[in-house]
Amino acid sequence: MNATLPNCLKSYELADPLVEDEAAQLASALSDSSGLQVYPRSITCARNAVFFLGRRGSDKSLGIVHSDSNPPGGFPLGFHGSSQKTDLDGHSLTLCETTPENAAALRSVFSFLVPRPLGLKKSAGCGDRLGLATPGHIRAVRRSSMAPILAQQSIRENARTGRTPQQVMDDAMWGVFEEGWRDGFGADADHLKNTADIDSCAAAGFTFYTIDPSEHVDNEANTAPFDVLKAKIEAAPWAELETGWMDTQSRFFNPIDLGEFSFKMDAGDLLRATAKYGRVVAHTVRMYRHLESVMNGKPFELEMSVDESETVTTLAEHIYIANELKRLGVKWVSLAPRYVGDFEKGVDYIGDLSEFEKSFERHVAVAKTFGPYKLSLHSGSDKFSVYPIASRLAGELVHLKTAGTSYLEALRAIAQVDPKLFREISAFARERYPIDRASYHVSAEVDKAPEAGRLSDDELMTLLDDFHAREILHVTFGSVLNHPDFREPFFAALRGDEEVYYQALEAHFGKHFAPFGESSKAVGD
Image (cartoon, rainbow, N blue to C red; front, side, top):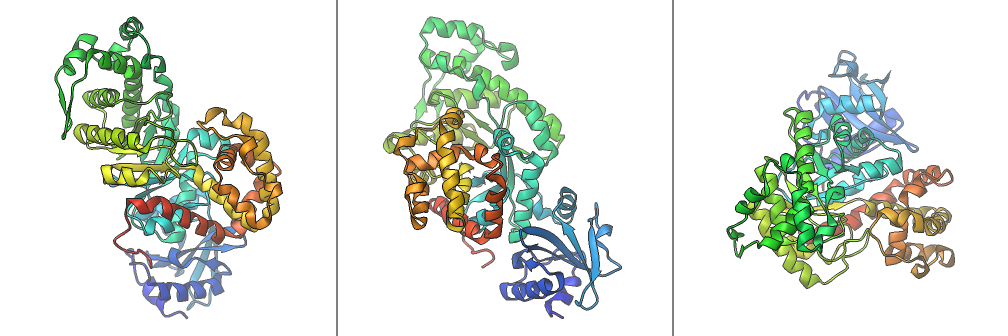
């Protein structure tokens, strides 16, 4: 019998993680008894039982070693599985499928598996469209100073991948358990456009809600003449804004102290800001108040995002948004303006970095004055030239949001383990790109992207470093994952060689996080 097991079984309260050697030895013993390949970091001792995650082939199972007098079904909510006697000093072993019911039962035992608000600590959203990436994300997070959001998907992404908010939450939770991550994580219900979206995500236990009022941005106001702006002001939703135009003017009459500088909003600035973003503020307030009601006292965080609008958010407009949201009682932890330059999907920043730095510094001043709150970098993956600027100017007040880049790293892994499948996906993506690009801000051209069919197996991964190929592969994810010829082999390739995917993610996200500072401790090393 493994010498560590008796001590684990004595612990009712959550025990400290096992040191690496002890975890490896116990994992070996548990593997022999269960027939699973046990993940050492998943081994967790509490309730006079030992919990662990293991895999057989591509299927994963929850294992629980316990005495007959302490059955898993006796825990809160209960676990559903099959029990058997083991050679582990006569203790029983219950093996459970990774079902929603068993995920809920495990969360009821271990609070570190329940997402929580992250506050004003700098953070990163690690979107996972496949439900397989969380272990790789965590490995990168361990060496960083970022607080992670590990369950993050938009309603649009879920529709294209055929997942539900609950599946997103559960997939992330199993990844957290597999890696033994106990330092907390958030769950972002991303780009919510209506109250029904809020309801489905709240039911799944999300803690971070990104309101997307971009449909309510009046982009015409950005260049409209004064007579048109005045007509828009008359038609503004004043009842919902709980104010009038005269009162609005009085609130912005005096210069605004932004720390190292002050800003005086002139009549034109205010006309344009109110016409452009008045309905945005009204919609955000409606969504926030509904969210407050649905959460019914449970802690949550709000982000407001206008990054997907057509026109840049000026300093005056940011001030207007922040001031009006605050006046109307909205509390938010982060805000994503539409920055200068282009934040296209899966590629580096396009634009003048000196102009971005000057503008971002002024946005930071607004965030500190009216919050403090974090500035969120949406479509933030692969913006390597921007990260040092954001880190230096914002400090802790920054949130980096990524999603599609984890899908691209999945393709990088597939290029290594199944080159034939990668070539087929790449060719299909080139065909679909003219259609699928419609809902994305991208500028790739098919004729400028290398063709996978012309590359050797060893050269295939270079496509993931090409601007045009990256965007083509990025925006066609939904079509690929819903294609009957691709879906099953796609997931089979990743599950069959999961370490290839995990290692690709760890390296790629490590590059993302490094400019924001390394961890003061190497957790789990």
